[in-house]
Amino acid sequence: MFLAGITTVGYSQFLKAGSVIGGGAFSFYTQKYKDSNSKGSSFSLIPWAGYLVADNLVVGASLEYDNSTSKSGAPSNYKSTQSSILFGPLVRYYLDQGLFAQGQFGFGGLKNTTDSGNGSSTTKVSVSQYRLGLGYAARISDTVLFEPMVGYYSNTQKDKTNDTNPKSTTSGLFIMGGFTIILKSVQ
Image (cartoon, one colour):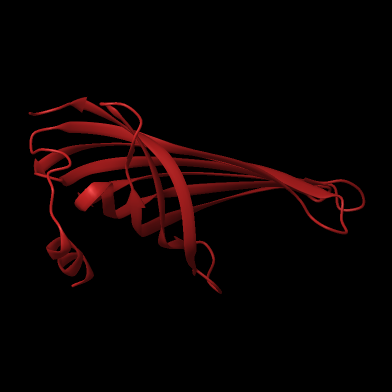
């Protein structure tokens, strides 16, 4: 209903049917935990591509790769590495003046390896995630757009080897930015 209400406010043909676009987002951060000798880093890479099935309506797919590490010195001396790969569909609709709404779903796997003084362990779980967001497409050139987006996400992990707590879900708000390139434009 929200999307239908916004589209009646004003409609312009931001991108035409038959166009092909692609883009992606990248994030990197480091962290140091207060009052401890623990630190970590993380990065994500999210390329995607889509086809405009109608004016301003993009249907496509995305691939998301995340990798994070954390480590601590004495007395615990541990290192944890976690990586995940998700793949899935996305739908984006460009509204008036470059505003857009996007929905995306991904599924895949996550691998977590922990090394400590007590040995090493590896856990593999299945992951599903969805994102719903609103953004703005700012034209940098005729074929390049900068697109910040804010929204809500939910991430569910299922561990079939853990009988006591096989499923965990995290959710919250996200802010991300990325670039989109118009690979084939239809006039």
